[in-house]
Every structure is written in C-alpha cells, then in structure tokens.
Length: 222
Length: 222
DNA sequence: ACCTGAACACCGTTCAAGT
DNA sequence: ACCTGAACACCGTTCAAGT
Image 1 (tube, rainbow over the protein chains, first blue to last red):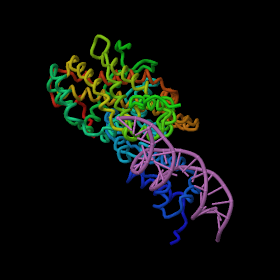
Image 2: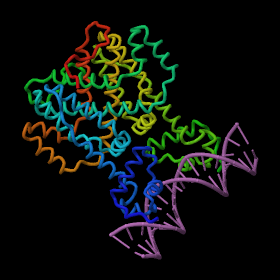
Image 3: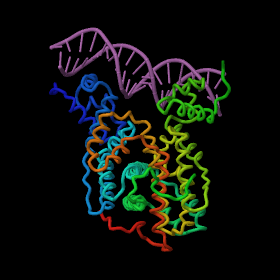
Image 4: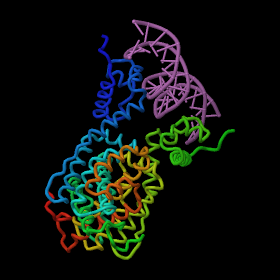
C-alpha cells in the first residue's frame, strides 16, 4: 500500500515517539523507516542524516521547556517554585532531556528559567555580579540535582553487603545517621530542602552591594 | 610476530587508555583488538563481551575514586575541601566518569566521600535524619555541579544573537546583572561559592535536635 | 521534488576449528 | 587453556535510478 506523502514533521514525530517509548537506542534509521512504512533512504531526503535528526529532536525539546511561571509571594518562595517546575518538566521527558544533555545544550534549555531566577534574585535585593552568581548557583543546583536523581533511578539495586559496611563503619559516631543514610531517599523532599537551604545561604549574603564579592565570607580557602 | 600471552588486565588497560585518549566511541572491539595485536575474538575469551568489558572499566573507576582526605579546621572548611577534592577527581577522568554515570553507579562511586561528609556533619552538630539530609544535599550538589559543568564544556559556542536577546530583555531591571550573566563563568569560584552557600544554609538549621525536621523552616510549601 | 533498492564499510557476537 | 578466521545479523550512509 503506497502511503501518503512523508513530511519532515512526521519523521520527527515518530522519531520522538520512538525515543519516548523505547529509549534512544531504539531510534535506528531502519526501525524508524519501518515505523513510518517507507524506505530507509526516504528519511535521508527529509532530515539529512541521523545526526541532524537528533539535533532537530533536541531543538524541539529545548523550545518545549520554554515556559516557566513563578508562583508564591516572597522571592524565596518564587525561586523554589521555579526550581520545582523545572524539575518536573525535566523529569517528564527523561530520554529527550538526556539527549539534550549529551549534546551540550542543557544550558541553552535553561535560558527561560534563568531569566525568571534573575528576576527573583533582583527582587530579593541581590545586585550585579553578586546576583548573577546566585542565579547560576541555583541553575547548576537544579539541573545537577535532576541529573543525579535520574541516575539513581537507573542504578542497579544496592547490594545489602554494602549497606552493612556502611552501618558498621559509621555506627560509632551516630547510629541514627547511619540508619538514615542506608534508608531510601525521598528525593522530592530532599530537592526542596536543598534548594531552600541554598536560597537561605545565598540570600543571607544579600546587602545592597554591587560587588565582585563572594557570596559567603568564611575562610574556606582550599 | 606472535605476541606474548594476552591477559584480562592488559585488555582492560588498553581499553581504558583508548577511552581516555579518544573517547568512549573509539572503544570498538575491532579497534581494541588491533591495538592489542590480537584477533577480535580473543578479547571475548578474556572479558566475555563488550558490555562486561565496560562494566569492568566502570568498576575500576569507582574504586579509583575511593580516597578522600578532608583538610581544614572547621567542619565547614573540611566539607568544602571534600567537595573540591571530589570535583577534581571527577574532572580528571571525564569519559570514564560519564560511563559510570550512564551505568547508574554515580552513587556507589560516592560512598567514601559520603562517609567523610557524614563525619563532618556530625562534627558540625547535625544529628540523625537531619544530618543525613545535609549529607545528601551536599552529595547531590557536588555531583550535579560537575555533571552540569562538564556539559557546558562540551556545549557548542553560544550564538551572539542569544546574548543580545538576554541583554535586551533583562536590562530594564539590572543592567549589570544582565552583563554578568552574559559573561563567561569562573566555574571553580562558582563551585566553591555554591558549596559554601549550601553549607551555610544547612548549618544554620543546626541545633541539637535529632529531628525528622526539614533543614530550613520557611513557608515554601509549593 | 520525492522515493527506491542495491551496495559499502562498519558494528558486536557466535562457533567450529585449531594448538 | 587460549587463540583464530569465517560467518551472521545488525548498523549508518551513498548513489544511481526511478517517478
């Protein structure tokens, strides 16, 4: 049965669906062609090659992540809300986000959120280079957190032997701490706690200076 | 020329060298065989298949990252020193660390550092579940930071058009902030600032309680 | 302008055969 | 116990040929 005309968008749609459902490894040109009901070589006419097909998928994902609306009344609340919204968006498309990451476009994907954070940092009284550092610290933290979190989810089950090791070694100083570290993590709660603690630390340094200065001031030289 | 007996260790060594010098994509069974001067199939006798070869490389990397010695006098200083040592170790083997990450073993790799952080959290007066959260917040932050940082380094050059966009949009509120965000990042300084700020935020909540409690206490409900 | 099958140079892996 | 070449089923990509 001769299928109706193939289009670039159709190729991208089916490719995205393939990645979403079966992971990036499933996106081979031959399988994609089979899914589309065309010859493998037809795809090349529409998207060039596999590399630029992936580029296109990644670009799409980046623009999809474009909308961030802060919620809450205080700057700190609004920053936490941006962080949470971002985390949710990233977690909804794990494979595609991983592809964005592999291609080094994580930062670009983050531009809209960065803008929102900059606004809130300003509202919180931070200025100039000082504010920029706070924005970037938050940006790195949120993105980094989600990357680590995703990694944990893919991780093979922890061998019980290792947990025992942990417990034996650390029990001397704080048994409850050792137990808590051996227990599973509530990653949502930890995320909010982390962002909150960082925001507290960042805003604590907020005085009107425009400064070149460091965010904290302790003697942590190396 | 018949080469001397092949060994599993020799296979792993050359494989690791290949990854370190030419990236993970260069590690094909055929190329590895050529490098070793043997038939492709000999490798299979020693390491099973490509998958378990990668497993072995990753396991090696994890144990290599095993030694962490905190430096400094206050707990806060010592935590920052652990974070910096860790960042350096991760950055020395970018490809191998990426492989560890892909295989979901980032957390395992982090066990020794986790132990050191737990010790310092205790010394700083944090206890029980409260201390565990602080340890994990730091752990996620450091690993996440390095992941994001590595990503930036692989990123394609930012198009000037985007920077202009940024500047135009944000200039209204804080011109210097906009300029600072358009400038390149001193990632080392940002890293230390971020860790410091997080430590400040985490230790600010430190009172003797064993608590279930959150690290901060503000009303950031959603 | 769009689609096709044949062909090329690569993969990882298996297996029967050697020593 | 260790090594080998041949063969298999997969890749992405190119290209001349069709409509």
